[in-house]
Image 1 (cartoon, rainbow, N blue to C red):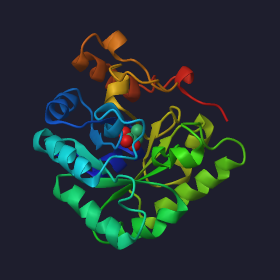
Image 2 (cartoon, helix red, strand yellow):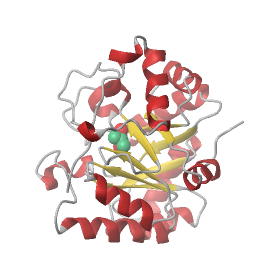
Image 3 (tube, rainbow, N blue to C red):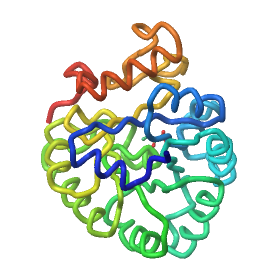
Length: 264
Ligand code: KIV
């Protein structure tokens, strides 16, 4: 049976950790589902791990639509999220709707949008017209040049802004919120403050679920790895084993450990 947003929200309420990984093609979609991953994210990280770019900025709507369709053809059970690329949702809610509709038509069940307060009217516009939205706060890679690099966010006074942004996203209708590279304590506070399940990546163990970039956790991306990435191939032994170990450790709350987390 298909996992829906309602399924994931119920899991979060029951304390059953949500497992998510990025996925960009049909073969991996089948493998990840078989290993028990509940949600597949066609992340714009594809620009780095598939296309070899230095950032996610060059990724186009066409790229995400293509990879979403590849994943959706083979994923029979998982909840599918398509990332909205840089430049496809910032100008107006109407334009964001038209672009999000292409990703949904390719087979996504939700789209993901980076950013806080400035994205509220777009999130409201989309959710009120039938397109579920996942927010993304903390380290938002599309803003890497504004942020001055891939750095931990939400330390010190910046923490309160992330809590406020999360509450605003929640009340605008966001169905889930990704929290990237923020202190564990802050992620715990955000998770307690919002209805939407939180999905952490470098945000400690107290989120409703976890996500990693597939090529990072399989240790096949040649670039620099963030502190929060664990090489699951080391213990898993095979790709299937690595993904099963990831699912097991997220469910048991043993991943992420303190060595993968940030303090405030
Ligand atoms: O693009 C991506 O893969 C993402 C995850 C890292 C959350 O946004």
